[in-house]
Image (tube, rainbow, N blue to C red; front, side, top):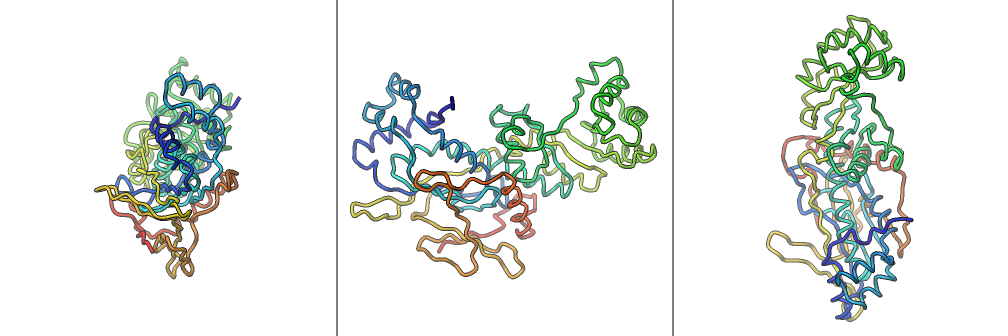
Amino acid sequence: MTMSTALLTDHYELTMLQAALRSGAAHRRTVFEVFARHLPGGRRYGVVAGVGRVLDELERFRFGDEELTYLREHQVVDEATLAFLADYRFSGSIYGYREGEVYFPGSPILVVEGTFAESVILETLTLSILNHDCAIASAASRMTNAAGKRPIIEMGSRRTHEGAAVAAARAAYIAGFASTSNLMAGRAYGIPTAGTAAHAFTLLHDSERAAFEAQIASLGPDTTLLVDTYDVPAAVRTAVELAGPKLGAVRIDSGDLAAAAQEVREQLDALGAFNTRILVTSDLDEYAIAALAAAPVDGYGVGTSLVTGSGVPTAALVYKLVARETGTGKLEAVAKRSVGKPSRGGRKNAYRLLDDSGHVETELITTGGLVPEGGIPLLHELVREGEIVGREPLSAARERHARTVASLPLEALHLGRGYAAVPTEFA
């Protein structure tokens, strides 16, 4: 039986629904919009991830007998609201930026059109997915940019919630990570998985030699041997002696990684293991990866920093009502005027403008139907009258991200705190 996602929401979503049903406003047509007022952490761009997961969870957003019983027993809403929820099916339309795309402050990365009743209760689920996944993808993109052509393995499962670990692996893959250690992510999303052994495996055996012999016998000489359990130079000598020059890789997980990598590279070359790769791990983030750019490193493993958004665990996205149906049946713009938290009313479209060299110049947000000459449309149909129409393979999002980042101005890739690399203009 497929588990419902309907209770992955906040209490006040349903009390708003109840009051709106009572007032008669619940069935007014509305437009909600997901956007960020700013980019947290002084980052230059954000990365869209999680849209596919939103679509998956929307299909399971149903109030079955168990959910309705819980709401009734805990007196969350009245019987009239329970009757509405029993038949709930989202019948509206959703438009959004594609996964892998970048966004900037004010970008309407998701637009939900439907009645107030059916749209408002999607807020919490939508934001919980997008705020997490966009934050992870944004951090991952900075890491892959810092790594250049060197691959990164996602290995943060032991540093976060088990469900978040799978979502993080998916978001990181969109943003360019090569593989994940998480097998559920591999099964669910087809992401390549990787992993060999931890220090516990070496410590289990009577000697490091015995541990290496067992691993090579089981996995072959192309395996990756962890060489910093005791003494790195001694481990490297033993590794090459046992596996020969075809040893796949060695992994260093402690100490001064740049200095250690240089010493290990020289030692491997002296032993004839010219093609043996060097992988480094140990609490890496985008700054540490950038600092290793000149070191003879062939790949990275990133865990804690990835699954925590490298210190920025949320994308600061909000879900706001921007238009509602009037008594005459027309949609009118509505907006908050709260100090420090304003919103822009109206159903929007979004376009990206490029300069003569093909680099992104402006994010143009329109409310009056304006279609700018040469503008690249960013909002795509995801749900049409309740039917999901916008699914795509994860590989498409990954390829899109690589193309889009390549089109950004150079300042977008700076790791230091700053302002958005591309201005958002409203017309």
